[in-house]
Length: 314
Image (cartoon, rainbow, N blue to C red; front, side, top):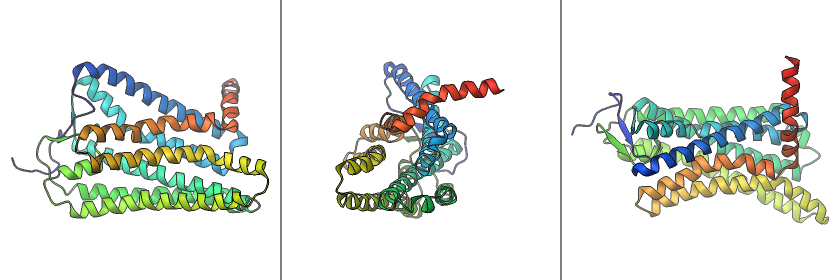
């Protein structure tokens, strides 16, 4: 069989999570529910933050951006739902490239936003008097903008490099979406440059942000240990609780994906780990921040009244 470039509409076949016909309706209902919960939960967080003046602070500004990214992060689910419903597994090469690009962009933004939120907590706890000056609106917007530009450029390079690869017709991807490492592994042409850029992306999007979060919390812990008042310690650390839960969930599931791919040769375990990383984590983030945060809970309770007031004003 001769390898070919990305000509042809149905270049790849996505195996999905299971080939069992009896499981397809269950998987469809489960992932449709998880997708709707993810979208609605994160949209409620965005609406609560933007509509409530009490939440117009750097921490909640970054949280609303994280919620937007989490909604976009689950864009791989609709294609999987369509494939289950239509009982088709094909995905065109442009659609596969789009999935790879979106996954890189939004996974990278998740990493960067979690890092920026850790830095925000570091400044708030270690330099409380200078916090309004350091974390001003201009600086916060600049942090988010630079993150978007950097991640978009790296992701675009990945996509352009992938366009030069060749694949055998009907290449089967043992996954429910086009994951970068899986696609590169199946290429019939040399992927050395692609692999180098992939490891560079892992360092930029994963290692550096993780180190930034670790250093921020080391400084936070050091500052908290110097406090003599137990109440002040608890109050300061409670502001980090939700963020630490999100970081643990995000990096824990991401590490699970890596370990399952490196240790186990079965694609099924890798797919299950990826479900936790790409679906479960974005779904749980709104609950983590709303259930553990009285300010967000209060804003969500006031949200229906604000919506009614806006509608009456129209």
